[in-house]
Length: 299
Image (tube, rainbow, N blue to C red):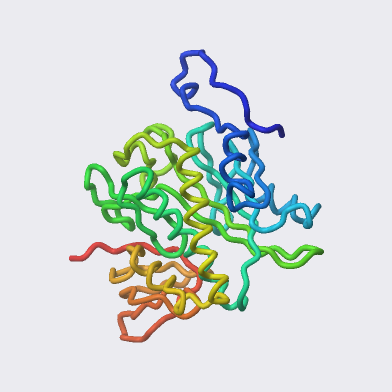
């Protein structure tokens, strides 16, 4: 896979007006010493940025010092949580994975996807002018432009997602964090009614390179605070900031747990390890560490 330096074609297809990422520009802005990243790779096309980066980490772990980034102009077999697939048209989305080596206890690593969500929300609010929020544990949401209510989603739609994976290599432990954001898709380019894009959400025109720089800057600031406090999200103030953008908190939810069980109740807070604390209908607290959350409309 070569670096993305090509220009758009003139075939008349609307998709061809989507500008490709310019590898030289991305590197000049984000690669050290000008930027915070130790390695930057820009690929034309890849199945999954997470899968590609994990394979490269296993093959050459010392060649990917943290923090490193692999971004693809087109991801055609993306991974979601619980093995779900995620596909986007060429150059219509921002699809990127980071190799990190977080400090602190592994028990705190459940906060990493939440911090990635906070960074994504911060970047989208700044560059796209949308009121993005985080749906626990890894969905980035924006308000539905038509204010329509959708079962399980309410008046919000998914514009992006995060997938965090712990990787053990011969050089030690790393965490790969994949982030995908729908940028310019139209209604016929989205596979599910719960999905949307920045364009459909009424965002001002978004340049993927600008959004990428904003995302990297936000993540660098957040992970810097994580390192300064040895992974203590409370002493660093990170837990409070995640909670402030998490639209799940304070709402009535139904959580589909791995194995088929469900928890229904009110999402009260985030636990010490980033778990969602739900007070169920018997009044008992349930600490949910994995599951699909559905927001239940108040009646």
